[in-house]
Amino acid sequence: MPGLVSVKTPPDTPPPQISLPSVSQIETPRAEPAILSTKPATPLPKMPPSPSPSSSKFSPRKPPPESTNPDPSLDNPDLGPFLLKLARDTISSGEGPAKALDYALRASKSFERCAVDGEPSLDLVMSLHVLAAIYCSLGRFDEAVPVLERAIRVPEQTRGHEHALAAFSGHMQLGDTYSMLGQVDRSIECYEEGLKIQIGALGETDPRVGETCRYLAEAQVQAMQFDKAEELCKKTLEIHRVHSEPASLEEAADRRLMALICEAKGDYESALEHLVLASMAMIANGQDNEVASIDLSIGNIYLSLSRFDEAIFSYQKALTVFKSSKGENHPSVASVYVRLAELYHKTGKLRESKSYCENALRIYMKPVPGTTAEEIAGGLTEISAIYETVDEPEEALKLLQKSMKLLEDKPGQQNTIAGIEARTGVMLYMIGRFEEARSSFESAVVKLRACGERKSAFFGVVLNQMGLACVQLFKIDEAAELFEEARSILELECGPCHQDTLGVYSNLAATYDAMGRVADAIEILEYVLKLREEKLGIANPDFEDEKSRLAELLKEAGRARNKKAMSLENLIDPNSSKRTKKEGTKRWPGLGFRI
Image (tube, rainbow, N blue to C red):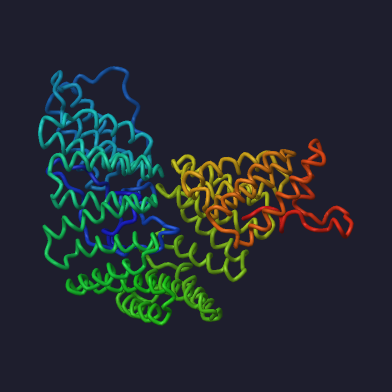
């Protein structure tokens, strides 16, 4: 299903055709485990298995306009099944989804007309599922949503197994559609509801329930809900221990996902343990390429633990296998080069780091057939991060812009694009292009709001960055609004003592002072100092800075409460006004704001 960090679909699998629902059994699709990204801090979703406009060789076309006169032939009870079969056959034959859409629309109308009053029609449900799948294949996801919502309302779960299956399938397909629209929270809600229905029909220990648990856990990893994902992954492992042989492929996939979750939570030793067990299972099943993928993940853990020699050994093992099995220009080879570049950068070997970056770029700029845009964009984004750390923001910016261009027409990538836009904004801010930085942040904010990310910590950080850009552009009122919204989000998501939240407090206090709201600035600084004294300690160098800020504000407030606000120009550049030597101390360090 689309929009998830997949551990099931091999990267070399050709793009699938339209997936049409089946009412034969309650289960989720199963396939072999695949390479799992081990960089949860900046997750880049894999290419969604559901069809997209770019994967279809037929251009989307609207169906023929409906006749104002009802078609009496639709009252024939034999017509619905015939039209549904035609829709399926049309898709299978490659004639194109536009023609299949017409058949599916007519089939659903026929089933609706022929339904017995008061009796839910599973044939109608099936036709609606097929209709929604075709809409998705045409990239018309917004039109698929109401179709699936209608399909979910038809079955009555109390009527038995088949009705429960229809409801389960509808919720999972609706979750996939929301995922393609970038609405991850709604997607997860649908998956959770589908899991409840499936457990009610099959029980908690059925292996198909285990597959759905892992599927939902993957979605939660993408949404960075790591605690919930861990609980579901543990449940999946328990189910597979009962129903699968020891060291099975299913267990290996579960452990790789669990390793990703543990790494995201900073529990590197547990992540390493799960990866070693997954590697042993893959070796037992003769999956050499998967063993190499796990070696790459193990290298990432060693890198996080600063065990550099062991990381190099794991990376070189993976590199050898990928080169021999996939070829020297495969994106898997480039991904190892990127990891080695990051390692050598951390160890101070900048020449070797740059060499590996160039080798990876050579592969990404001339990709082999079958390489997805998501793979290239992910690689370019990771290389840009290395260029950023070696103080080459212009080169990093070029790579981020290329990544964004690759993903701009891909469905289900709104969150990823928003993340790239936010990083682009940071790069533009660093090189002094503040107007462009603000525009980039604004675009990211709009996408994150549309995707339901308006309450995430990442969203709060982006708002803070946009506020800083507004300060540089002297848009002080807008900056205050952004800092206030960022504060409310970060207080809820991270707590008041988190470094990001403290940074927003400082920025907001500086902004209030610039606006003449000295009392509000004093209130914030007093609160921050109280937090540091009671919970964080006063050893932090920021403590003395904030203490001196507060002292100066209190002195000013006591001397002249109606004093005009400090000009924004002087706030940004404390040296812009002439002062005596005695008055020459900077009121705010640097810009007076914290990035």
